[in-house]
Length: 240
Image (cartoon, rainbow, N blue to C red; front, side, top):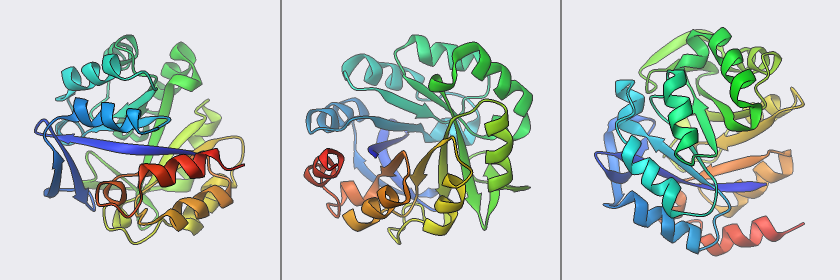
């Protein structure tokens, strides 16, 4: 299982939110590029980058900062936040981003996602499924749809999407542990890669995700506050 250290960018700084609320941010650094390099140097296999301002505004506010990260580190990065056009997808991939994460646009226009996957390949595209009480939330988690998260994953799978980031909003940034039942149900759909997001608070949570058979797990606040260390992550990723 891949452990993805998260760098969430808001106002040009590295932050973590609680339950996705933009006014509940804790700042962990003033230089996202330096943070990315530090995590890469300490053994991260991938980085998970989110343009939080872009997620709320629907535009890629942190595009230039993310492009610098892609050029600075040698490990692959995946990026989400405000990506709602093919131009944005192409630009990020051309800038060196390995995988682009589509969220709100995937729920609103699944036909478009299918076209993008066909054009750029399933390895270059992931769909972010952000769930509140089992239903998908969109537009920076401000709006909650009437679509069930598992239904959206199943529908996107049939359209060629192979990688999904499943976030339980109620647990995001709260360090209360991941929603293992929901992640298990998503993984059970089969033939897809599920990346757990939200609630990771300790190494045991990462081990639980690995034991479910997940492709990956994202850790943010737990890493920045020392509950999980990069040494822990390296050891977990090296275990057979």
